[in-house]
Length: 100
Image (cartoon, rainbow, N blue to C red; front, side, top):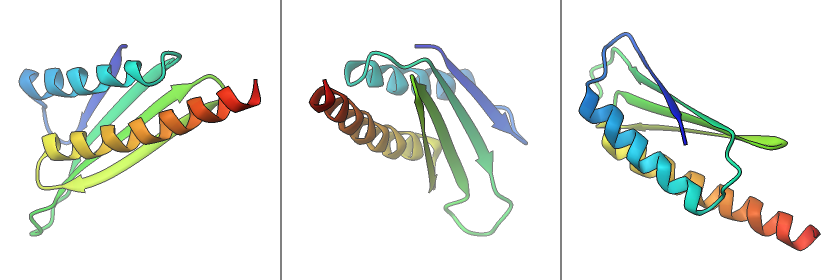
């Protein structure tokens, strides 16, 4: 799956983008009809340690899922967001399976 990654107000390094791509690729195991996925990385200008915002939008036929996590690191936000998306995609797959 192709993941469009955008970093707002900073430049994300290749290692972070590869990490996000690898984690998002695991979503294909749970739901194989993913059309597109967009990831937005933002850093807030606050004194709070949890100033990194990871936002992911995954488009599937007829719906889209959006997850937004705020953490200390983008890696932690990625892991939390992907596990949340896994649950949503599993739920959608089960729902479609019961309607057929």
